[in-house]
Image (cartoon, rainbow, N blue to C red; front, side):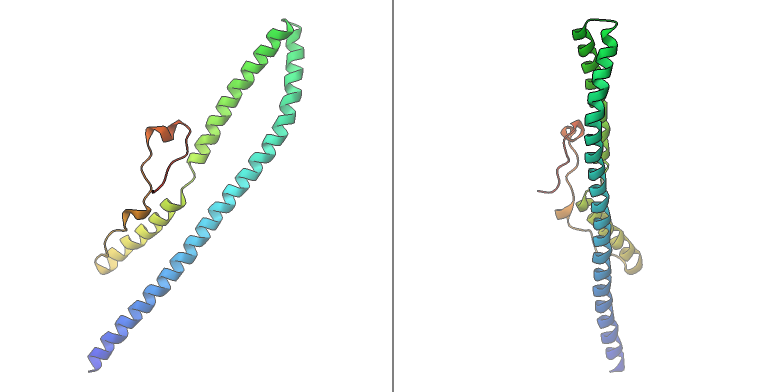
Length: 155
């Protein structure tokens, strides 16, 4: 009879430990998502400030460059040359920004990685619990995703 109680106590303890572990994982995941959100918010705020400053600086620079080039060529040619240079700079900056946005880890992938790490650990300790369902796995990127569009996640 005492062996049955010992097993019952062990099973109850295991259930309580699993609940404690799940709560701890959810709290840690919440912290990870909050840090990621704060980082994205800071990046967006800095980007808005940079765009505001660049707007005025670019205007002054453009006028100065056109006036300086007007000494060497007609005014319309100077304006066209400056416009072309600014267009190239815009394209390069846009590509760099899109690379940065694509490097952000989607929340679904972060959740999946955390649970997969936990399940991998559990398999080594207890002999396996199975795989995480595919419901939260993001779709693989398509060729369109690499052309400046945002990636699409689960349907």
